[in-house]
Amino acid sequence: MVLLAIDTASSSCAAALMDGEGTLLADEAEDRRTGHAERLIPMIADILFEAGLRKSDLSKIAVSVGPGSFTGVRTGIAAARGLALALSVPAVGVTTLEAMAADGRRLLGDVPILSAIDAGRGEVYVASFDADGVVVLPACKWSYDRFEADRPELPIATMRFVGNGIAPLGLKAHALADSRTGGIGTIAALGLIREPVGAPQPLYLRSADAKLPSASALIARQDERSAY
Image (cartoon, rainbow, N blue to C red; front, side, top):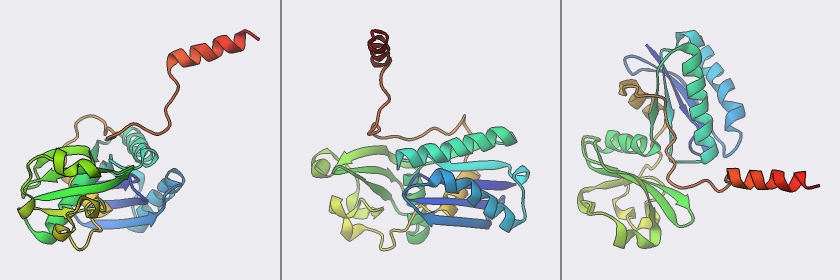
């Protein structure tokens, strides 16, 4: 059993190989805001070479499905689906928020955790998990200025928090000191135990900034052009 894990949902581009026992065989990560698509495939080739493996040795693929960068999420999922199809192996999705929470429990023990990612525009992506890692609050989007009014009843006093969205929520006193969570190794470990259920799907919690024109708009443009 060899699993390939992919993460391009955030400001990093990362890939890792893990065996069936949970041992990390090789991994590589780069901080980058653009160019994930150009770097990912060479990175996968690099770690396969380092581990002395071929693509044909892969038996499962795990990919971070967001929330995160729209372009990054699409890049990772497209690569995972394409490789899974070409190799006839299953692919599974792991959310960035659950990977962050899993790292939090690894560092702190079995405690309830809320993961928060700054989404810009005064918003934050959040999800909470109990001490066993079971979802309590599914991934959703909150407004920073409406947090106190809109947040559900959560055991704030007993929870711990991870992610770069914590400080603006006013929860810094309860935050995990080492906020570098949700790494590629954790995505691999979660993917290893996850049962495949269809192809991985992107987790978008808001609409993309750039939208494709509607069918009616395209038809109107064609009519305008044909008039000349």
